[in-house]
Amino acid sequence: MRSELGFKRIATEEAFATPEIIKAYRDLLARKGSQDIGFNSLMGYYLNNTSDRARAVSERLQDLAARRIADMDATGIDVQILSITSPGVQIFDADTAVGLARAANDELAAAIAAHPDRYAGLAAIAPQNPAAAAAELERGVRKLGFKGAIINSHTHGEYLDDPKFWDILAAAEALEVPIYIHPNTPCNAMIKPFMDRGLDGAVFGFAVETGLHALRLVVSGAFDRFPNLKIVLGHLGEGLPYWLFRIDFMHGASVQSGRYASQPKLRRKASEYLRENFYYTTSGMAWTPPIRYVQSVMGIDRVMYAMDYPYQFVPEEVNVTDKLPISYEDLKAFYQTNAERVFNLG
Image (cartoon, rainbow, N blue to C red; front, side, top):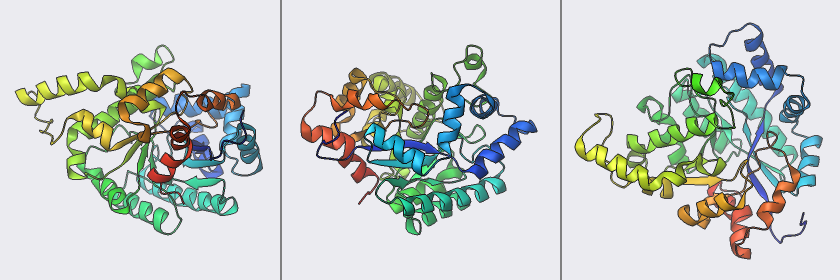
């Protein structure tokens, strides 16, 4: 890989977990305390499976020091923007989740302080208590120096388009920081057909569930209420950039006919919110054709690099993005300056 590009490679969707959260996951799995089928499948695999992959991911998630830095050096990554792994604290009851989020944020802030040139962070918050989540986001940004919030998609089957969560959206808009909506496994109401063929995780279920979440936000009118709210989606937009034309046609026809009482009339086309309120990262998608497509339809200034460490840690993947057929300035924007602008890095 090229070691001297003349700019930084910033990776924007890189996961970690604290030992405390891992222990809480293990305890939940051991006592069969979670009724969430997707959680049991996802974390049951990464924490209990004896394969080399599961063990390596579990170990790397918990390392915020020498091993992670060495992996970054081997991959040519200058900076990781760290966020709590899915499902974060959203699998727990509200009180437990609030406490775990605060402790995880303190631990992440300490790791960033130890490696200020290599790490930045997104605040873990507990949507189970929206007021506490908004307060923790403010603490994370103002006191700990975080650059936004991570929401691991649904929380016990509920999504941010529900107005009861809008304290969180209001806080993010007021603080001028983005919310990164990271995938979660589909909730129990939709997971069975995915589980039947092992498609509940990153192979497909993640994208379906998170694309649904983002589109629910758009059609709910959330961005008319919070016009300056910024949302980041990984995996090149969870499929949504390919559906813009059909979303506009079918959503517009549905609203015009008054088919659903739950669909308000929006001030703009659905695709305009996806182009103007959303940003996209390449996590797990080191493939030139879809990267160029999303850059072309969403804009060069809205697409950022991500690796999806440690779940998709393939050091040579940066060779693909290094060779994108774009100008030097656009490559610099892709790797560095877009992330600096969106996440207020400085």
